[in-house]
Structures are given as structure tokens and as C-alpha cells.
Image 1 (cartoon, rainbow, N blue to C red):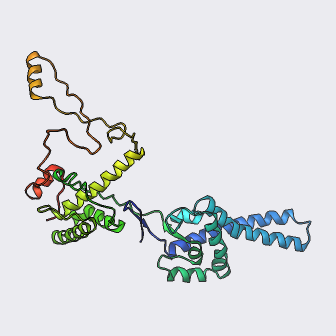
Image 2: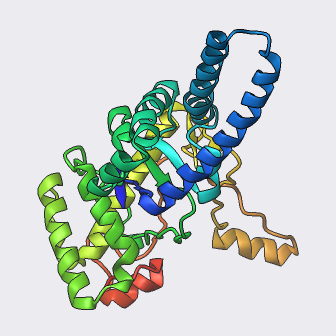
Length: 334
């Protein structure tokens, strides 16, 4: 499996196609090309019967080159790497970075493929595909392409659990610019799979990741805070900064447009309402009237109204992992 890591610490898994599936796709493409060539040859023989032998030979060679070389190049260019054989086998030709191929990639693959597949009966292509770690033939190497499998088992996306409420905003002053994408990816993979790990292995892995992250950010793990909760809180802080940056630029967050100056909320979100004072409730109950809570908008940082108490104090975590689980559903490994 080949992995590409983007700037958002997302791993793109590319499953290279192996020799059996690629060979079957090539055979299907060649069968279609031979049928097209035979039909075209019959039509050309009937239409060029009045020409001399040299002209008929030239027309025959031209039609062969167009069908066997130009045909695959045109099909891969127009279909973005999916010929009939590859479509039947669930394969696609992509660039090394996972993007769709262009005409120059298909041209190089088709030109070299004529030599290593047709002229040598596929011997060179088979040897190169067996030697390559990703099953690439010479045409893929020179064109910078890769044949990957499109029909892969669907794997459920891992859910990163949120940190405890009393850790929200705790690391707002941390410097996250020195953290590499590889470390973000490792932390995200750990958080999504920590419930599947052995408790001792998961605890050791969390401590190692937390130590690396603290060394990069200069913010040590607070006393009494589990390493897994620390990792989740820092990841949430990074996501919050990305949202604030998107709000400042007026871009979209989660598929919804964000208007600058709208309290950091995507359009369509209803504001959070605060409960009415107790005295107001008592007076309204005595008068027999219903009480309507006045709207209260949260700030861009998601701060609660002044005077409200949410969860344990920020400088003192709740006791044990059970308190964290009750407030946020985050259960770090034992």
C-alpha cells in the first residue's frame, strides 16, 4: 500500500495494482484493439482496392499504428486513466501524487508500451512489474504514473474523540508551527484507534507522542492530565485555529459558508440561548406568563457567558478517567 500525507495530516491510501490484474486488463484492451483493427482493415481494403500495393501497405501500417498506439493514448487521456480493460478490472492510471493523468502521461505510457508490450510480447513489462515495489512497468516509471485499484474494501473513518470540557482552550497559547505533519498524523491515528489497543501499549504510545508533541510546542503536559487527553486537547486547538482562519478569510467550514464578523459561526447555525434569571422566572410564574429565553450569542472562540460555570476548573482536572468520560465521552486507555 502506498501512502500520501497531505498538509491536513490526512493519509491517502493508494493500492497499487499487481501483475495478474494488470495483465488481464491489458489482454482485454488488446482484444478490443484487435477487433477494431480487423474491422477497420476490412473497410480499408474495400475502399482502397483501386490503389497500388505501396499505397495499400502505407494505409495498412498507418491504421495499425493509429489503432494499437494512438487508440490507447486517446482512451486513457479522455477517460483520465480508465481504459475498457482497466474499467472491467477496477483499475485506474493516476499520477505519482494521486492526481489524474494528462495527455503527456498517456503519450509516454503508450509510446513505451508499444515497445515493452507489443514488440516483446509483454516480457519486458512483466519483468519490470515484478521487480518494481509498486508493480510499475517502464512506461509508468518514465511517465511518473501508477496503476491503482479503485475497488477496495470500505473502511469506516476513525472518529477523533473530543477532550474533556475542562481542557477546552487550555492550550490556546501553544505554538503549533513547529509540529510536523507526520507527528499530527501519528497522533490522529492513535486517537482514532486507542480503544482498540492494549491498555499498556496504548498508555506507552500516548506518553511517547505527548513527549514529542510537548518538545515541539514547548508546552508540557499539565500535572494530573492523562497523555491521551493532552493529545486530544492540542488536536482540538489546532482544529479551532483552522476554523478561525477560515472564518477570517470568509471561506467555508464543513460545507457551510462563513461570513466574517458573524461571531465565528457558519451561516445557518442557531445561536446558543442562555436561561433567564431566577427572579424573572418567579415573577413570570406568579403572573401566569410564559418565559422566553433571550438569545445570547457566543464569541468566535466559543466562550461561555460571563458568570457561568462549565465543568471542573481549567487548572484542576476532574478525578479519574470517569469524570472525563461523563463530561465529554473521552475515555483514555488505562
